[in-house]
Image (cartoon, rainbow, N blue to C red; front, side):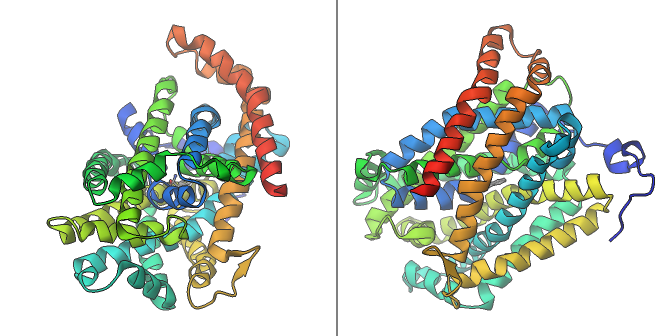
Length: 456
Ligand code: PHE
């Protein structure tokens, strides 16, 4: 480990001097949407909606995205573009004092999420290969999934493979890689999601599944559901930890960002709606309990493929694309930590990437084992994986988002307003409303949900 403490001013560091920028606005939107659209939409969202009353969760989630989510997303992009730095550096530069703790909280969140994200992404790789082998033509998907989790080394090997791919992209720098890949892959992913949704809805009992997804079951209206919806909104939009600060820091000054924030949120929401419209019809078709937890997408989707012409091919393509969607998100989890080590401590990018990835893999091991060979890795009625997921998404991300709302609303409001001076004239009242929202309503709402969700 080499610390560049001796006289390494920001100017002297090549990483700070040659800061990369996106080639186009569309490239930024696609990369940010690539960060947002991932396992959160296709794996996490249907699983939580299934456990929290279907349509009720959907409504709560949409409300969160449309109010708190979009506001904090824009706040992060503005912070990043203004500071041109990693999350810790951004808060140090713009806020100073204890504000940098918000950056550290974000780095910790990114790191913890990456640890279990790699595990779940590993499942998608495993399922791609199992689809290709035709395994699902003879074995029930639920059994295949259970067998995968029960194995000790197999899921770990897939997680390792996935994290290695993530590290390969990040260590090579992101300029051409991320932007170019997302421009091709995101449209492809959406095309496939639409196709699968059409197939799923037209399955026998498909419409019942759709009804479950859209019809609110109000008996689930609890603070726990509201808190889960908030956590999902933050997780899905990749906000509350500084991933969007990092991506925003690669934007050139002066590019308008208001519309981009809306587009990113819209694409992310569309992906979640499509995923729900695939998974729940498939759940009803396959006769599975919607509340069957983190395996939901994995045990239902292969049963849809089995009913499609060329289903095996579709299955492979789908899980490969899902792995790629996960990859573009995992990159945005790794990148803030790497940027932090490079910008703040003078690490070389490759070494920072290697270290972060290895430690994230090691921290992910208990998450993987907790669902299979070591069920004793559990607390508060949750497996270790569910626990890390809950603590990060439902506590750390909202706490980070709350701090960011306060930061933009109180500490740097004039700067943030000036940053958005280039937005269209008729949007200026909206920007004033946004500042007020971040100042009062957002912190109050997030704070209330955090506390209420915790005490019950
Ligand atoms: N938004 C990603 C998803 O939905 C996960 C993620 C969270 C990525 C936080 C970056 C930061 O899969």
